[in-house]
Picture (cartoon, rainbow, N blue to C red):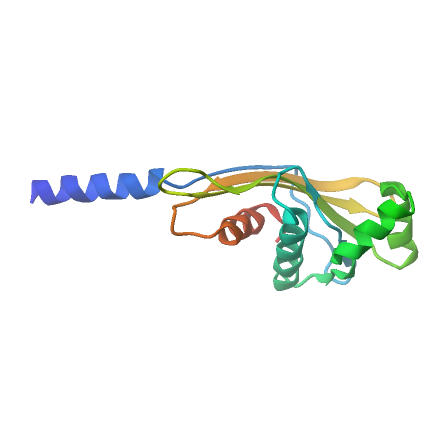
Amino acid sequence: MTTKLIALFITSFLFTSCSSMQIQKSKTFKPEPQKTIAVVPFYNYTQTPMAGYSAASLAGVILQSHGYNVNTENLRPDAEAELEENGKKRSVLTNTLREKGYDYMLSGEVTEWRYKTGIDAEPVAGLTVHLEDLHSGKTLYSAAGSKTSLGSGSLSQTAQKILEEILPK
């Protein structure tokens, strides 16, 4: 009996220690459900192509599942290229979104998006999000999270778990 308890303890310790998550949030803010949130591509500070689009797309779907009015039309890869080609900056983007009638803009950064090297190849993701009021220009909510998962999980699952924790509910 004692041997079984020790084995159970060791097994549960190993499984819980193989996955970790760190979350930091600003004060709680809940957007008004009738207001529209424009999700824009996240800045990608990793070497993984399109990670910013992947993270932003996941964020948009999660916000929609929470009942928010979300528009992800700005997640087309050509939308960002178009902005860069025209020399438009972030302030121009916020003005354009405001003129289109959006109330909030969700932006963010991808700070890590990879599989660890080695025998386990565990997925690792690090994300930040910022919710800005397009009328006042103030950032109403910010959060950051990072997570590493067991080798059997996928990178998008890991990112989705982070976003579930850090996005307004």
